[in-house]
Length: 534
Image 1 (tube, one colour):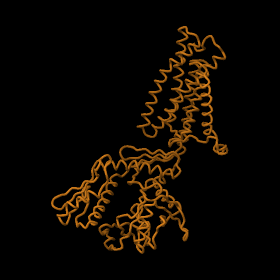
Image 2 (cartoon, one colour):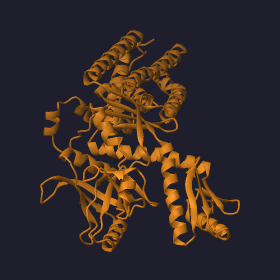
Image 3 (cartoon, helix red, strand yellow):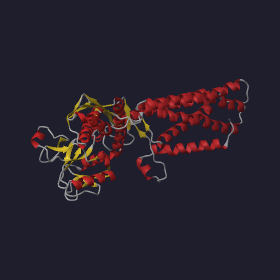
Image 4 (cartoon, helix red, strand yellow):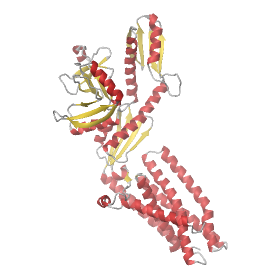
């Protein structure tokens, strides 16, 4: 193993060049970095929340509200299904998480139940022909509709995963770098946004459901009854943000929903100069919007955001272009925030903030200094130990390999845009010790071989070849532990595991290959009769 192969020398030289090139941007001032040519690497380490400062939120997905909304929608679906087939019914209501109704003509009970089974619910994943809605007949004319519990739980789990993705898109729109968004428990989400010092702004952007719907106004509703909160069947009373009345009656069934939007931007009205949100539908939404506006010229439709009517304009002509604008009492900032929410998509269920914290930049700077000091102290301690235990030559070669190892870790983390946290610094310090441990194994094996009477070159070769099994075993178990921590741990634990994983790979490379090349160069130049570590 002591052969000075060309590929080994090339590998070491390229690794040093790689380490220097991609570590250097972290040491240069921002102005100097910006002035460098475009081909020069400019990625730097991302500092985590504990090092850079920022905001921490613990959110809970309101899965009960998701179930309640599903009940309301199913009630309307049942009403529309039976009314469309001219089946009379009464007492359609929610009760204890289920829906009950009575068919007026008992002879139509079986037909009504069959219609509801065919038109309500959605297929259950992995169950061919199964539906997530159960329809049962009761007595002579009663029908009871309930949900399959496993399907409800699966829908809640999907809502949490979907919420994580939507939150990520919303934060990305804000320009926050390297946010950490992870699931905690059954229905909680942890959000860490380094560099975002205002948690209230973060809450405004990610906490709003942003469910946008376009619903026809019910012009036939009794306003006196609506003022008392009573609406005709198939309609609902919603508050208005601005207008002649504080409320308005709209049809429950949305004609177009926000899921059909392809784009939303903050703009200014050409006539009034006021901030507005311009939007564009996909082909399905454009077609449906065109059909609805064509059939309802002279009538009003409501633009509803999170259960509140933003505006309710009158349809003057068919809108077939698939685009329009939302007006209201917007400022440029609020219009832009709404556009961000609409582009990212609506949350499937409301979010409630369980905990929020702000980590100040000063606290982050203190953590960086503490990390630098602890890393420096650890490096000096390792340096002193290696020099005392193995002398200036062998100890110095180990320190050079250790420095190259540090360069490679920072370079790889910069290239992959990994986030460095305070536990990550602990992983970095542990990596330094692990790297030296490999050198200790190699050197001690060399000592044993020399003491047993073997020649210098044979002892050096045996030191590397026979220690490799132990080195590989130790590092494989370490990286397996790191992978387990990364898979099942939270943000800080994952930061530690990621740094440790990178360090394990680079440590084996530097402690074995770099050390081997340097010792081979020394042996070729000095031709020693004995090793200076005996």
